[in-house]
Length: 277
Image (cartoon, rainbow, N blue to C red; front, side, top):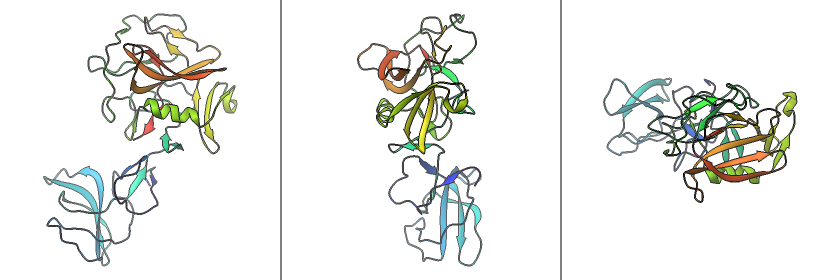
C-alpha cells in the first residue's frame, strides 16, 4: 500500500526491528487489540489505536492514528501522546544481507536513489564541511579534468542519519562494520552485469544479492575523475572515521582482482550505498 512493504508479523513488542519503521499514514485494517488510555488504564478488547509517525497539526501534544472498534470502521484521527496504542511497521525497501537491509542502487542527487542498480549515481565527499554536503557528477567533467573550486578540505564532520547524510528518508550511510559484514557474505567481480555493459561487485547469495557498480572516483586534490573508463574499480563510503590515517574515513574499495577495507582522505569523491535505518 502506497508502495510500502508491510511488516507481516503483527504488532511489535519491545522496539521496532531493524529495517522497519512506523507507518507514515494509516492505510489498512488491523485486528482489534488492547490499549491504554492516558491515565494508564487498560481498555477492553473492543477498540484499537494504531499509531503513525506524524504529529497532529491541529491538536497540541497529539499524533495521527487509526482508531476503530468492533462496531464501526477505522477512521484516521489523532490522540494524546499519553495514549499507549499499537504499532504495525512497514519495511524500508531493500535487500536483506546478514541482517542489514541494503538499498538496491547508489545515491544519486541528495536524498534520492539512482533509478537502476548499475547507475553510478553521484560522488560524495565524506561528511559535512561548514554545514554543506558536497556531491558531484560521476561523469562530467570527464577523466583527468580538474573541477574549479573543488573543496579539498579534509576537516569534515560525520553525516547525521535522517538530516545531513545524503540517503533518502528511512536510509542512512552504512558503518564500517556493516560494509565488512557485506563483504563477508561473498563477493564476485562481474563483467557486463545483466547485459548492462557495467562491471562491478556482486554481494550475497541469490536471491538476496546487491550489485555495486565500479564507478571510479574523484581525486581529493582537484576533483578530477579517475578510473571510469572500463569500469575497473569502485569505492564506497562508510560513516566511520578512519582510525589509522589522519583526516580519513573508512571505505570499501574493489578492483577486478582484489577488494578490501581502507581509509581514504575525506575530500575524495566516492559512491554511497545506503542501508535501512
